[in-house]
Amino acid sequence: MMLIPTHHFRDIERKPEYLQPEKCVPPPYPGPVGTMWFIRDGCGIACAIVTWFLVLYAEFVVLFVMLIPSRDYVYSIINGIVFNLLAFLALASHCRAMLTDPGAVPKGNATKEFIESLQLKPGQVVYKCPKCCSIKPDRAHHCSVCKRCIRKMDHHCPWVNNCVGENNQKYFVLFTMYIALISLHALIMVGFHFLHCFEEDWTTYGLNREEMAEAGISLHEKMQPLNVSSTECSSFSPPTTVILLILLCFEGLLFLIFTSVMFGTQVHSICTDETGIERLKRKNQPRERTGSWQSVKETFGGDFSLNWFNPFSRPCQPEIPSDKDMVRQVTSLSDTETMEDPSEETKDEDSVEVIDE
Image 1 (cartoon, helix red, strand yellow):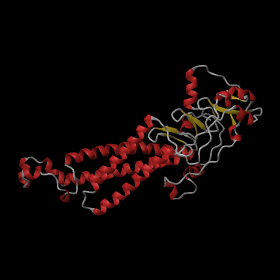
Image 2 (spheres, rainbow, N blue to C red):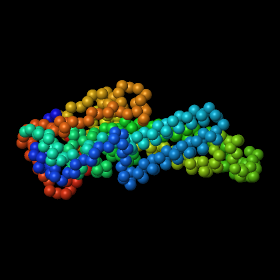
Image 3 (cartoon, helix red, strand yellow):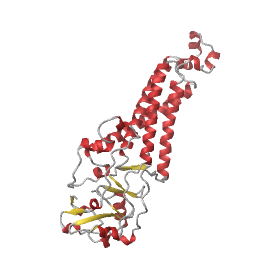
Image 4 (cartoon, rainbow, N blue to C red):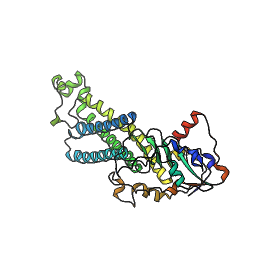
């Protein structure tokens, strides 16, 4: 139980009548552990499909434009294995981040019977989300897309069509890390490919008639399609190859910058034990923070090991909040008096921005 300055919050009262528990529907029978979680949001689903398409496009260009036509088999095998492994881990992390419950609070548990069972004493309060009708534990925030309160919610990411919260933050961090790595790897290979091909096979496409005569190249030879067995550049024509590589270069550069920034902000949030919402709406609140190394171990699943980089291993499962964790102690009884704002704009702001605790 923690001491908090409650003048920052709304929907606070010791009396269960203020929470309007009669309007709350009791939560359904909880499903089995490990039940698939999926958000039916059109924008999020479209973004997730685009993510997969871009990764598969990069896979196509790397394999069929750069590696397979190459006669340097050691170079092709090593880079092919590394790139495909990173791409597989990136897509696996994406699926785990998208299909894992981020830490949803039981919906509709703000019933009259439940609130009365808490037996609130003077100076104690509970917090109710007016949107999903649930009693919010500490550091839980409401997501207007998922329509649920999420424990330790950092933000809602449309690219994974899910919130980033207590249970799936590890998978989101791995997703950003592996996407940044394959983007960097693809950019390096594109650079080497351009340098090699401009020096060798593609130079004949820019020669005029006099230069071709000096080089001993006939017009018929120039117009012939490239032979895969005799070139290390591509099985496609040089113009098509250049277009494919430029698109891959643009995609890799864009995603390298974006995912690197996201990876850095997520690692910073984990080390400081402060979510993105808490950082944006930071207030002088006496909240006890977990040590940076302890927070990292809780997010990635125990002491340092290869499982930290494995999207198929679970992070440390947090303890299920007890009823006592939903009750909080105020600094003074006068702070429990809450001003209600009748404007619709303020009500929406409370539910969307979510009360920062």
